[in-house]
Structure formats: structure tokens, C-alpha cells
Length: 190
Image 1 (cartoon, rainbow, N blue to C red):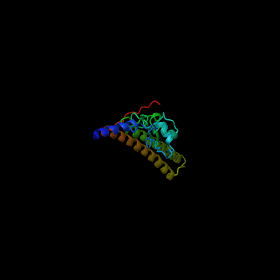
Image 2 (image 1 turned 180 degrees about the vertical axis):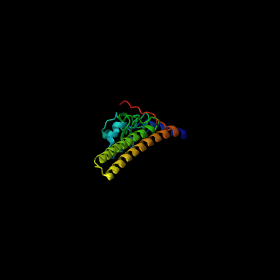
Image 3 (image 1 turned 135 degrees about the vertical axis):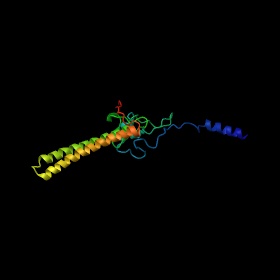
Image 4 (image 1 turned 90 degrees about the vertical axis):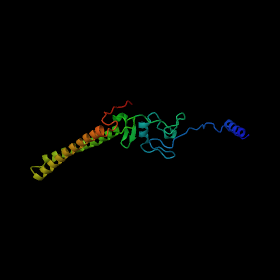
């Protein structure tokens, strides 16, 4: 008798739509760009959206970056090979891809490229400044010595920075065998 009553309650609840699908679309709490309703999107949200979700409309009211696909029960997948950081969009137009197997190598290489571009620029400016000091020293031994020290320091700093890159590449590639390190980055078609 108890089994019949439970079975009857089950069929009645199923018939009246207790298990019916909810017509409102489900959304995630936050997207990968930091938009968490009811708060407003962050300032970098539109550029992050272009990087990670290029096929989504940039209107935050639509909440397209938060909608959960009912068949797979997941929010939209980000564009493969792209990562948005404080440096901007990594992948696509920057000339390298963030590895598909969660490889840290290309990201580290891109950061090293940026850092050593800055180091090279600063060393070049110090070389120019030291040359200017020497050229305008008018045989003043103190100014000549100061200019030589500037040029020597710039060259030593540049050699130190380049040798640290070579040492880091050697250790990451041959000793630690970091995946994706030492591979030349390939641009992704956009």
C-alpha cells in the first residue's frame, strides 16, 4: 500500500510540472572578465570581452558572457589561445598563443620579451646620455669619468640582462623541461 501511494505521488507531481524545466536561462555568478551582477562591469571589461569572448555582444545587460548552456551545463568557453591579463590580451595580435595544455612557457616568454625590451631601451638611453656627457665634457676629467661610468654601466647591465635570459631559457628548457618553453610562438589567426 505504501509503495502504491509513493508511486501515485510521484506520477502526480510529475504530471503537474514539479519536474518541469525552468524557462528562464541560468547564468553564472561571474564571468572570466570579472563581471559579477548586480555590480557594474569593471573598466577593462569591454577589452577583456573582445579578447576572451570575441563573438559575444558587448552589452552587459544581455549577460551573454554569463549564460549557461543547458546541454553541457557550462558558461561560454573562452576563445582558445587567449588570456586577458593586466598587460592586456595575450594571444592573437600579440604574436603568441597561450598554450592549450595550460602551458606557462609562452606567457613567461611574452613577459620576458616586454621586460627586456624595456631594459634594452633604458640601456640605449643611458648609452646616449653617457656619450653626450663625454662629448660635452670639454676635457673635464670628472665629467669624462662620469660619462665612461654611465656607458660602462649601461653595457654591463645589458650584458647581464641578456645573459640572464639565456640562463633562464637554458634552465627552463633543458633542466626543468617547462612545457611550451623554448618553442617559438606562432601567431593565431583572428
